[in-house]
Each structure stands twice: as structure tokens, then as C-alpha cells.
Image (cartoon, rainbow, N blue to C red; front, top):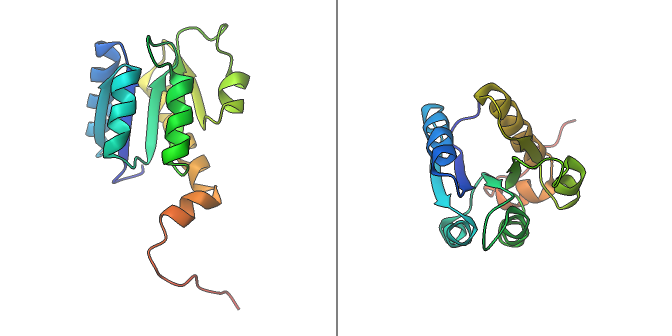
Length: 143
């Protein structure tokens, strides 16, 4: 299990927010929740976040708009899109928009955990993640 992550969860369903927050906090993560897209955009001001989990279908600002804004501000963040409308918002559309993960509602917490961790490791594989987390230590060379 990955420790010490800062996670933003955005959804306009308070029940989803509560379930995911409780689950993620129980895993040792710091969690910020936002009720809907506009609040999600505002929450980005308190970033950066290691992972951003957002619903796609929300009034005002949808998950794709939030993803675009988050990518501009924090290109190193892992982003997972959620939807109850997977026929309307297919996986291919989410991935081409820049998501690191995608999950259809309803889902189990076990499935969510797998998608969550996979998205984090995918973010780690991008060079921009390492650039953003450079701690000033020289990279060791292997003889």
C-alpha cells in the first residue's frame, strides 16, 4: 500500500464523497473532498495532489474540464475519472483526455483500490512526476 498521498475526490454525490473519503483516510491518505466541479476547481488551489479522483457527469464543470485544469496546474498528478454513464463516456475517451485511470459506477472498494493504485504508478512512470518531486539529490549512476 502506498502511504502519505494527498488525494482530491470530486463528485456531486455526497454519499460517494463520504464513502471514498472514509476508505482513503483509513488507508492513511490525506483527503480533500469537493462537492461538484466548481468546488473541485477551487480545491485545486490547495494543491498539489498526488491523485485526483473525479466524477465525469457533474453540473457546471464536468470531470473532463476538471481534468484539463488539473493537468495544466499539476501535470504530475495521477487522475482517475469515474462515471455511471460508461456508454456515454467510454474508457477510450477518458484515456485520450489524459486520465490515468477510469472506473464505472457502481464499483466495489476492492476494484477502486486497484484502479487507484494503478493510476498512481502510471503517474510515477511519467518524467514530469519525477521533475516535480526532485528533492535536490543527485541521481546515482550505476557502474
